[in-house]
Image (cartoon, rainbow, N blue to C red; front, side, top):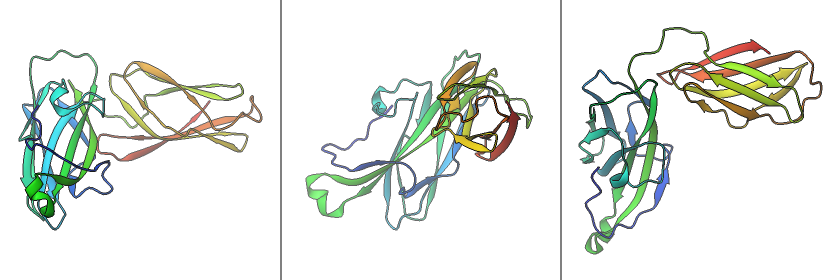
Length: 234
């Protein structure tokens, strides 16, 4: 992976998309291993040019682009986008690749605003990074609205929710609400559950009535970032 070819960079790095001038045309990427490449469009909504560097990592947000070991290449990895303009970037999978379950990577897009007053000292100022998930899979998941997650409530103090994902695909949970005899309990950190794995999630408080009637309300995100709500008796 190429590094940004400017020496003596001084920048303020901000992760997240809320302040970004460069916007990606989707919130997540799905890459089928049978495809030759996938394209994304980056659009500059600022009123001045932006220098953009992009790279993919395997989950470590701190890894430098030149040390990221992933089976992808980006074309181009560094580009300049004029104000109000968009530009396509190609993501190319490097074969051969053998995988039984879906693998998640992260696409990083670093937007840098040149500092006109600092050109003489060869510095740049204000860098914003957007980071979205890239799911690599061998085939699409089954077309079903039914949740694949299996839940179990450990009726102790504190209460614990156990969740298992028996599928070959990641499941992103965006909301968890447990109602026991009218009392609500939430999880502060809804997870992304990896394929063929499980997690134990603490809830915000001990169960008042451990053996009461329990109903779980949870939400998941699909490939398009659309939220789906589910309800299950426990």
